[in-house]
Image (cartoon, rainbow, N blue to C red; front, side, top):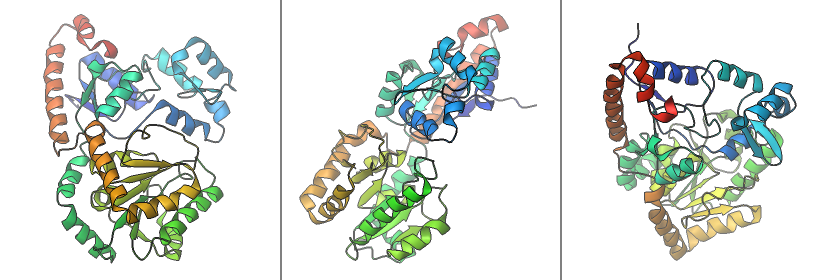
Length: 370
């Protein structure tokens, strides 16, 4: 038999093993912790659902069970672009409610019954508090996966030379890294429209050559064989072995859509262009001076050209990222240690609760975990 002392997850709101394990752990007084993993918000989750085939019946109000849930269990409903959407299908929600594994606040990451939630930065903490996650549940630790990145960032010049040597690039030239948007892979755009957008980006990058090296970083969901001919057509390099966590600390300019990768670029003080030709219209980065959100195709290339030609403008964006960094990233190479310390504290608290009589255990849990 297993004798767990702590349950660590990336969320506590997805109906199934995640919520069932957390509920079982709570019944036994076993602590649970959500570790930082990725950005999440209710609008982005709603947009994703609305882009799926058959969403009207699965998440919308076409099915009778969904309409029943929307009427009697309104915490499961989110109003988006004039549509009422459920977090999960109505039948699944009813099963979760009957078996007592339903998260109280499903549309917010951390809206379930885990004891504590470690968050990456102060910005995320403020976001979750706004989404009605109690600040007693939240601890700003930083992101463990960034600890190794921090060490690379401290020796960025050395690592840039190594990466350029591996990719056959001149390390003396400025380096632009693009996290290629995955609009079709995540079903935000049909494939034909997605490829038109990819061709647009690659063609603009090609106009910066030979003065600028451009390296493309593909998402794990992206198929290298589909992108490689297009990159070759424009003389661009796809990094196959190096991930964004290796490339961002050494780049001069970073290009991406709305993504947690942008947070890392802020931490590393890298000027960033956020692409929003796709109608997301999020405002999360609008106030960051080191980021420019581009919503019109015709503005993209002139902005890149200015970044590489105008040193004062470039330095202004670097300073903007540095100013924003403390709010957007706890970036010091010690996040893993902070999370391990947090687990130790939770384990000790769990032992105290487990020593209580069964009838007293529930009252001793954090209020949101009962």
